[in-house]
Image (cartoon, rainbow, N blue to C red; front, side, top):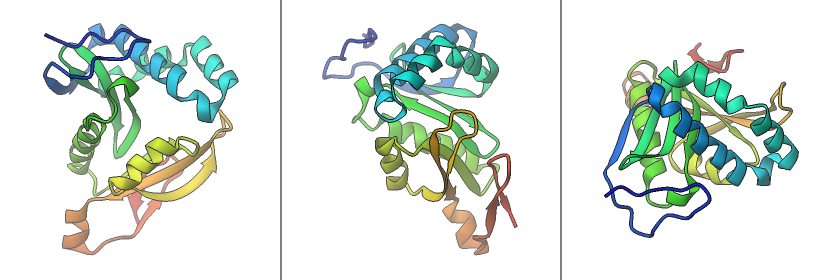
Length: 191
């Protein structure tokens, strides 16, 4: 029996259902939008503020982002329910979200490790951006070996972000190459 997650309702303490990571398809768009809006509405107000979160949701920015990037989404499912997602492009984790109602069960770690493994196949250095005020996420990334590289203010949202990187330990061990620079597009490239 799958765990039924109703938005706004905490899950049962037991987490029945099989955990899977899979690519998204067109049928996932609506439940994915609902989950992402729930996470933004519930978790992002403390560091983005009510006005920015309300504006983001009202403008349906998530709908447009998901429509443009659906082919890049990897979904973390628990039974039949989407409980997390990641968007990986080139050597970047462009987005990562975990439903807070299932936090603390190691699902975020599984999704992050899965994403890193996929991306390290094509690049020895990975990047991601995180809101500077999202202390929980930033602590999580640092715990998993991500390094703060640069903090800056996003030109569009005017929100402070941290750019993180992670080097493939096998590549560093074999080549000793630690020289990488951040490009204008936010990707890490060898110098």
